[in-house]
Length: 393
Image 1 (cartoon, rainbow, N blue to C red):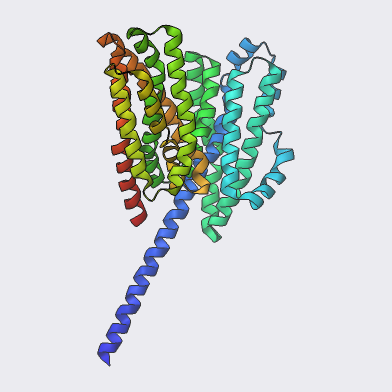
Image 2: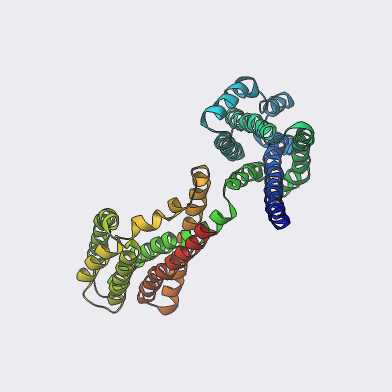
């Protein structure tokens, strides 16, 4: 009987320990959320103060007087009269987190627009857009903190949250003014857009960041290989004795075949039992065609074959983020995905051009296109491995 009592106490102790751990985990998550929301609200103070921080520079360049400058500063808060209530109602309808991200997006867009503004009217419109985003953000982060905490903890949490406004103002005074003096007021104002846009990425979890950094590369490499091919194949064909018009027609035929193959790839991959293996085989065939083109083989058959095979994996590569991004993080995740895509597709063709110059022949660029395309195979395998581990964790 005592043994039974001991077992019962042990079980109860285990349950208590698990309950305590769960409680601590929830408490930690609440305070982490408060930190993120406080940082987001600091962006409001930072953006509000940015105009005042570079006021002398901005007024001089735009030809506005102090009264107009004061109106521009106050315009940031004016949308609160109209949008505070709708912002709260829209949060209840569409979700607080989604509206917070929309608020940050409007702040980023308005900050970018203000940095490019050429007139007072344009600057006022941009500042008003800033204000609308700030109102939505302010209403909803305050509501979210109220939901997260209760009792005396709520008082402490709210004191932390409201301090974000003067902290944001202080950061603007410390950072925006010196940057404006060094680089100009437009660049200084642009930092407010960057601040808001960066905070929008807080929707992504650490696992999603890792998967994005790996999962972006198949699409990046695939497109870079295509761009290298269509950029340098015409010059290589001219080297091989074709006239410019004929070389252009041949490369144009490649793009037409690619368009058809990309669409056909959607149907093929939908019906395939192992879509990744289809992608690997098609990439191998495309790389072979590029290698044969570089070796001086008759171009038309290899251009057609390469287009038919090379276009098929496109839908699989561009769909990779949708396999792991949550609806709440999909907008930010796709932004990261395409940022990496644009970066890679800007740098790799330039590298191919440098190899072309160094080798004195377009053959080097075509080889690089083949190597770049081939790299999608191991990267896709690595992505699958990371995704499996993330799902089993």
